[in-house]
Structures are given as structure tokens and as C-alpha cells.
Length: 508
Image (cartoon, rainbow, N blue to C red; front, side, top):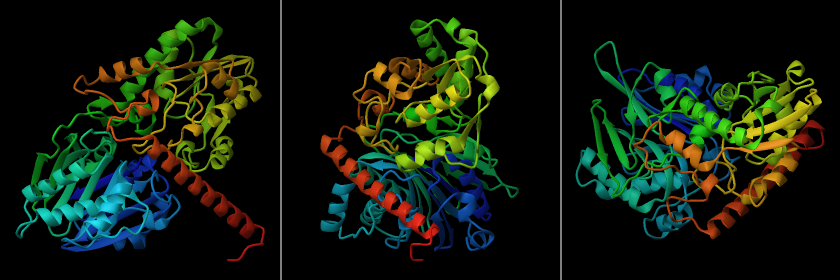
């Protein structure tokens, strides 16, 4: 999961991209980067950290140009702690191509071998984004018959990318001297939309972004989502060209976007994220009523922040008061996207503090958007008990997360998932709740699908174990497990080094 944005305008775009990245910060907090283009010259700044920390005034002044793109990164492939793998990526031939990518390529390793042995291109990092930009660059080189490069040739290159690349990918790219390109994988797993804004001179500016909130927050009007397999190309004159570049595209948006990842004020593939979460709360209430008597509950309390709409709707349906029982420290990152289990455990109590008066002597129902590893839920249940709760019930607005995700969400190994190979009772005992209620998979799909009947299906592999690209094998999971173990060792080594420096026992 990352946040990406691209803008083409007649005015400088550095501030627009910066503001859009702030609105997409929830999609990635590991690194941020911006590239702008003036004529055919690229200007880039990227580094690890939050948007507000990566870009200072001097960095913004060094990003001139009227076309550009940016990304906030949440690493799911490659080395999570290597600044060189922050996006955007750049290749100088052909033309000069800059690219940002949200998603995860499931055949990245095979493509890397192809690039070296057949295409004669060298990959210098473990990032699948570097693989993707080199595939695109190679196909652009093959498609470009004459100069200038035409939109038809760009679309031909994208069609070739679709034939070679597997997995999930929403992409924004700049082609030096020609314009801005955006495309989405044939399954439409990761989100991508575009909007327009008419300037004072009557010229139309175009912005492409992961979520509609990035457009609306900058005064752009949402036009529509980029369709699965579709490519849009905005040339330097501001003219927009679009073409379907995949053979059999189908719309299967990631269900976890609606459950947790996206901002509630976004609309993804015609579905209001906020309304989707309200609907999930309604079906969760029905599930709860069939499981336990609502009379046993005194108050419904959400776990900030994604679960609030579901918790409010559930409380209304069962006729119980809704209360805010936890205060969130907004300056601590989202624990779901923090690498390393030890970091997550430590951060929970830094992130949340219980309001004792809402818990003391009450039977409380805690509502969370999902339960992934279970460690956060366990800590929160204990916090509720320490605050004086009589009984603590836990409800998840999402079904049990039982299977690894390979399409860009940080849950690649089954051993980390609390619901994998555990019964409901075993999960309840682990988190320490007096009762545990989960959402139903089919009910969740049904109520989200009702908001846009045009959606053919959902990418919900972490809930139902179905991998829609059809190319995921047991070997892939073992490879991911090994990569994750390696990254965990790097994180622990980094923690030891920082501790040594703090204690004065390490070298600078």
C-alpha cells in the first residue's frame, strides 16, 4: 500500500503534489518523494520519513516545472529500510522515464531475470518498482517507431506491460518531453482515479491519484476512476487520451481499502468508503445479535479511527450508546504499517489512552476495523480492563484474516496472522476478551457490492484465500517468509545500533 499522485498543468506543480501527498499520508509513512519536470529535465527529491519532514523550503524551491509526480511509501517488497528504494524511480532511456507505483508484482523475480538475460537491463535494488519501470521503458523502446512518440505507441507499450507483469499495480509515470501516463492492472486491485481543474486562463489541469480525497482537497473535480487495464495519457498540450490496453479486464478492487486502508471521505470505484463502513457496521450488528444478547452490552466504543463508522452504525442498530473511550495520539504512526512486531507492541500504549469514566463498571463492546496479528487487540482489551471495565467484548468489522496477502498489504506470512489455523475460541482466549464477534465474508462483500453493482468481484484473498491473478504458489509464500525474516533481522540490528549510540557504546 502506497499513495501516488501525478499532475500536469501550466502552473508550477510542486506545491500541488506536496499538498496531495499530505492528503495521502495515511497510505505510507516510511518515505516520500517528488519529481518535477521542466522541459525534458527532471528534478527529484526523496528520502525516508513523513512528507512534512522530507520536504523543506529549499527542497521545494529545487522542484520547478509544470508536470510532476509523487509518492508516499509503505514498503511491501524489497528492503524496507533502504533509502535507495524510496520512489520515484528514474531511467534515462528511452526518452527519460520517471515512475511511481502502488501495489506488488507477484512475478518480480522472474521478470528481473528476464530483464537481465533478454532485455539487457540491470536491476540494482530489490524493489519491484525498479523492475516495473524497466519493463515499461523496454516496451516503450520497442513500440516507438518514429519520433515524436504518439499516444498509440504509449498504449501499445502498456499493453505489452500487461502481458508480462503479474500482480497488482497502479502506476503514474512521466515521459520526458511527452507527458504524463497512468495505468492500472487488469484486475483493478489497487485504486487510481483522475480529476480536472480549469485554471484562470481557461486551461485544464489534470491530477491522477490513489484516492479521490487528494483531488478534492486540491480543488480538482473527480472525473472517474481509471478502469482496470486502462491507460490514460495526458500530453504536454494538456490533451487527454485513453485506451483499454488489457485483453480481459475485470474490476476486483481490494476489499481492505474499504475496511481499513482508504480515508473514509474517499470514493473508490464508485463506492463511498464511509458508506461501505456504515454498511459493514449494520451487518456486524446482525451478526452480534445472532451471537449474544445485546442487553449484555452497556456501551459501544470504537478503536480509533477506521472503525468509527461501523461502530456508530452497530450501536444504533442494537440500541446502545456510542462513546469515545480512547484518545489517540495523532503523532504516532499507524501501528498496522509499522515494520517489526516489537515496534507495534511498544507503540500501542503510546498511541492510545483510555478514558476511565467510559469503562468503569461497564460491559463494553470494543469495535475494531479488523484483527490482523492480534497483538494490538490484546493490548487494547487489557487497557479496557485496567480502566475498570466489568466485561470486555470485541467485535471486528472485517472477517477473520486467515491468509497471506501478496498484492501490496503488509501481511505476507501466515504465522503472523492470529486467525490462521486457530478456532474462534482460541483467538478469543489470546486477545483476552469475554466474547469475540467477527464479520461474515459473504455479508461484507454483499453490502459493499450493493453500493456499486458494476463491481464484478473483490480481491479479498486475506479473508477467503482466493488469489485472483491465478499465479500465486506455495513457493511464493516461502520466499516472502524468508524476505520478511531477513528484514526483521535488519530492523533488530538497527535497534541495537541505535541503543548502543544512545548508551555511548557505539561508534558514530
